[in-house]
Image (cartoon, rainbow, N blue to C red):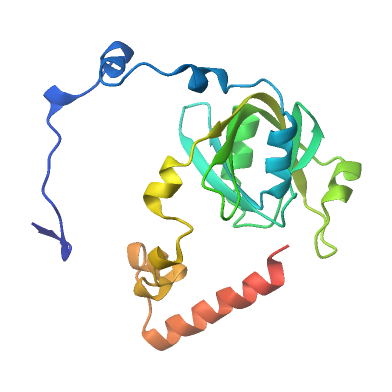
Length: 222
C-alpha cells in the first residue's frame, strides 16, 4: 500500500489481542527475579554518583496535568549535573528552542524521570523523583560554561534510582561503529520540519537555511 508516496505495511491491530489490565500483562512474562527487585534504591550511592559525574547526556521525561508526556534530551560536558547531596540533583537549563515544554510540565506536575547515558557504556542509570525550578544565583554560578550562566536549573529530589542492564544498547549496537548510519541519507532537521509543515524551498535556499542553523549553533550553544 502506498500513502503519500511511502510504502506502508498495511498491518492493522486486532482488538481482541489487546492487553488491558495488569493481570493479563503479568501472565505474558516470567516473574521478576530478586536482583531486579532489589536494585531499587532511595538515594544516590557512590556508584550512582560516579555514573552521574561521568555522564554528558541524559533524557528527562515529564508530564503535564492532563497526562500529556514529553521526553527531552540534555547534554553538556561530563559532570554537568550537580550532585547537591545523596538525594538531590541539579540540572542546568541551556538555550534551546524556547518551547519550554519540560519546564512548563514541571511547574504543572513535578514528577520526572531521568535516564543517564555514558558514551561507551551499555548500561544506563534511571532516576525518578520530583522536580522544581530555581534561579538561585549561587547554584547557577557553579554551572557556568564558556562564561555563560544558565537561566535556571532543574532541581530533582531523588525518590528512586536503579541501573538498567545492557540489553537495549547491545541489541541496538548503539556504540558499534559498524552500525553507524550516514546522517546525509536523510534531509536536514529544518528541511524535515518544512517538508512536514509549510513545504521546503529549493535546494539553494535550503542550503542557506541549513548554513544559518549551523551558525546559530555556534552563536547560541550556551
